[in-house]
Length: 304
Image (tube, rainbow, N blue to C red; front, side):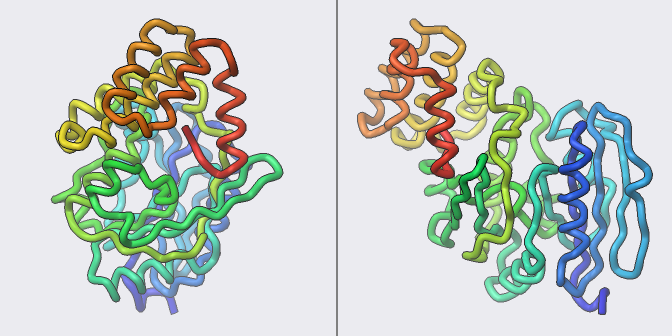
């Protein structure tokens, strides 16, 4: 019966995607988890749909407007601060959870004594689906800085509220456009304690719908912000090269060819093994479009 396990707040930030939101919401409410679940739906820069609100035994839906910084980070924080449950989870409005996700995560957190947990995901892009499953060994701070484990998707994260409100802190609303706020958050979570992993694909993630997929200028600004914020990148050339490689690719995508090539050269000097160097150079040299390379990567369940 609901109530026999820790209560969970699930924050869904949304912006003008009503059909996808309904699917995400229904999937959270259908969890097999035997604890109380409150779904906090936060409408960001859009009219809140109060018809979504409900209150049944063990399952409740609350609808809010984002009262903080406009954007994903502020919306998530509005939801976090409204809730009171022992655990906090996130789900993007274009993703959906499989029924056993929450039960599996809470059990894994208890077994490992970990304040944070992630699961694997299934990446859906057009007619292609690819499973991406992280391991516990990948979820250390040093490895996350270097590799940015994409399988540790924000829609899979569950974290203890006490840890979130103290050691980790809220989602960073200063990151330009909220781009990469999930990466910044998981770095801080990894610094706060071990991250448990359920090595199963328990979240279906929709790629190609991202509001960031073509905001290359914002991506450049956000990468610069994260490099300055996290000193760990200054101590690992390969980690820094990964970010500079992404920066070079974004610059090439918006036609800033000279700056893109300069950043690509800097990336090469840091780590000749960084593949984004060569992708950025190809785009800057007009050998291939950024959109074409993004499409190829997404079809394989990867990003750039």
